[in-house]
Length: 165
Length: 444
Image 1: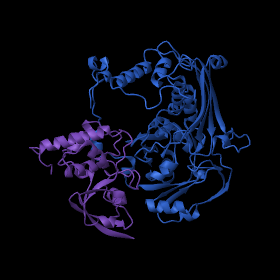
Image 2: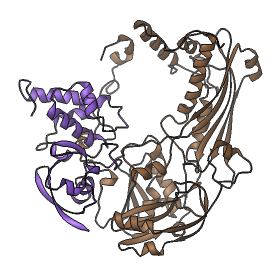
Image 3: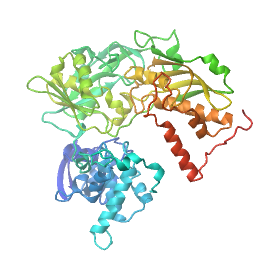
Image 4: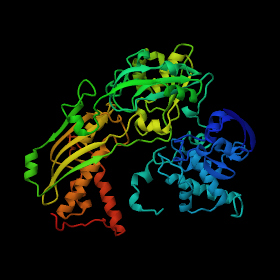
């Protein structure tokens, strides 16, 4: 039995007809056609479906759509502003953190949540923040480097090295 | 990151090349970072149906009968197909066409596809697949190397369970044994491994107005795919077009056919576009893996630390289909000496059919399995001789002018000595030592 849900996705109220057993990931991908969030395992192992739910990074494959209704969802599609890539997106490209690209959106969402709360993370903190995101191509080194470079870029952008919020 | 002069090479700093030695931004990286890249599982086309596979779920059985009537009655279902509905040979395989697109008289592994469904949505396709009844009679499953080598075991394919036997012979083995001061003999087993590309297998197929079957797939080799798809589906080569979609990791497994034939057959039969996306569980069960191997190695060295001989057998489990197994396992035999100069060699390899999952190409292509054995042997020989494992390798490694196990003369492209020397320099600069006893103590 399908029901109508209103989801606040990337700042817009979107309606979707879905069964109560459907995951936020499936609704984003199949009903709202936001396919940037990927389905690598559908059981919270790989992190490629990571989105922000009320500001917190979650694996959207394990969130049932009724639990996401009337809450704030941010997906990879919202990170670039007016066509300008977010510093994490740009640095992932420049530092060689992208290979097959399938883990990349989820990886970036985890890094995005980290840098919003902790604008100057140590490598250890970066590694911890992306520890729920599996990448099979890069070996993670260049991803950590990209997040570090993005943190620096965001700090410079925000002026005198203050918080990057 | 520390800048270590010993990790730089002169060529890198002086080369007048345009691209070599320079960082190049990957052309499709930005669209991937934006989340804009559409992999096959992200694609939707008008009128698209969803495909689903019914897997055998049993390793070895005779198929008596398949009932599809109830499945076909599920609302939204457009096709329920078995091997009888395949218009072509129904066979594929990279080395030999020994795999069935849909199982015919026999099931040979749990990862064999038995039936296909196309429906308006994934739920209907899943429901229909669950209503297909497959009547089978179990056969003795061949699951171990010993099972496969047992002459009384049932034959998985008509030609028997030993698909291929290869040999490497060099020098005089008896002489090598006589010249040995130390000999180590061990059995090594490596395990089956899934590539786990982040993107599970997926395909999208449609027949275009000119009658060409178009198949979008994240593949490593569209033209070799086509050479397998066309005969399996009974189409001329020019009526099949394989379109390389973005590939979410392959590591060798997408060298083989994955979703192509199944999704193509569903599109041919329904005359509708069909998308077929594997779950992770399906991806783990179906398609190729890394070969498990059993390796029995006997290796000798002289008192002054020179390798004298290698006497070895390698058994590779290629599962229910050869895929590239015959080449992978042969290659393990060719590389059984590793990058070392061994004057006397006997190595035999056996490519064995079993009812396990089919194994094929995976990064390293048989060389990794052999390395587990030859490097362990090297360590144990060094230990018995009371030599540093690094010095022992430096003494025995291939150098320009020496030949490999199969007689290939090494030229300037042979870098093992320089590699080992750099490790030695690195370790001595930092006073690093091996975390193992350096001298033979009581057991030599």
